[in-house]
Amino acid sequence: MILKPSALRQQLLTNTMNFRIGFGYDVHRFADGRKLILGGVKIPSTKGLLGHSDADVVIHAICDALLGAAGLRDIGFHFPDSDSTFKDADSRNILADVAALLQKDRWMVGNIDCTIALQAPKISAYIEEMRSVLSGILKVDANEVSIKATTTEGLGFVGHEEGAAAYAVALLYRATLAAE
Image (tube, rainbow, N blue to C red; front, side, top):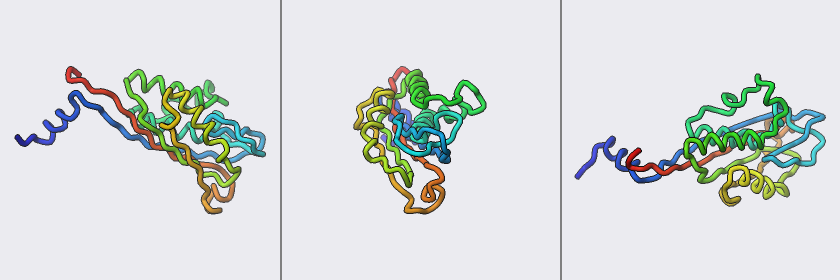
């Protein structure tokens, strides 16, 4: 029996897993007098990232990847910088709120892969702590959260040490039952 594409799709969605992939990106400029917080971890530095919240580019990119995968718009929609509630907000709390939104819609995190583009300071010594913090908030195993760091070889705003960027991809899944 040959199934039409719509019938095949319906059969695949019945009693199976529904997978979604999302992509996130965030960037912030450096500023004096700010703490440098990446992946929920304070990194020793002479300057931090400037933003309405704590400007944690790692968590912001991950939030956008998760929200995008779930079809729930973006971090700016849920946590706008025009809302004073989020002034100097701890991004770990924002990630916890995103996790609650996902849970409400029965989405579970399959894995997250995030790359931080940062010329300085070197952060490899903090990556395991970031993975631990993030996996704790999301209630997943640390091996389901990958954090990598790279430089831009002196090129662009990252290479000129004007700011940092983070890119994230997230895989979400949920069970789809025949009755749904």
